[in-house]
Image (cartoon, rainbow, N blue to C red; front, top):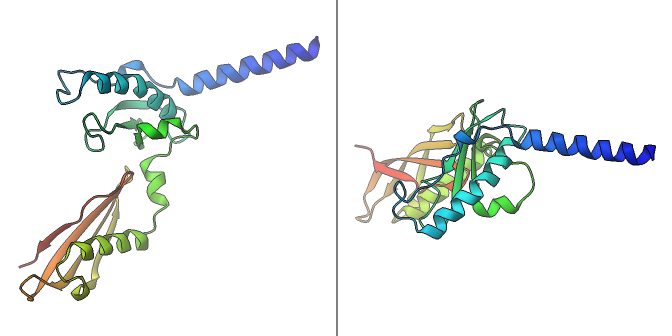
Length: 198
């Protein structure tokens, strides 16, 4: 009987701790979708977003990186109306999270954008940007990086920005000077910004 009581109390305390851990947020920080604010989204996707957002909130709130959830909503930048759903979340300590709806099946703790970015070295960020820039050029083999111009910046919310100058030939076979900038976030790398330097 005593063993059963110990098991029961252990389970009760464990469940109480889990409940306390996953409810470290006020429901007012959850920004639900409405048809008025999101007119391009259909009713089914809005309902889906509003039901999944609480799973995303629980997952972020239970992360050891989040002290207290302060805001969560649908990510405009990473979601595609009626096709792809992603949530952003911010914590009081400045940590930011981006979670796609298909990641909510995973039971592991949510990782902040800062933690994800820490897995990427400056060299990897630069190499990815170089590859993306070369793929955008008319004559990729003429790409000539100006090494002294390379800069890598890590934002506190996790984005990594890489920029550099380079020379390359354009479609008229003229060698010109360019500047490129790439941004890597939790969803991958955005298309590089490339412009001619006069």
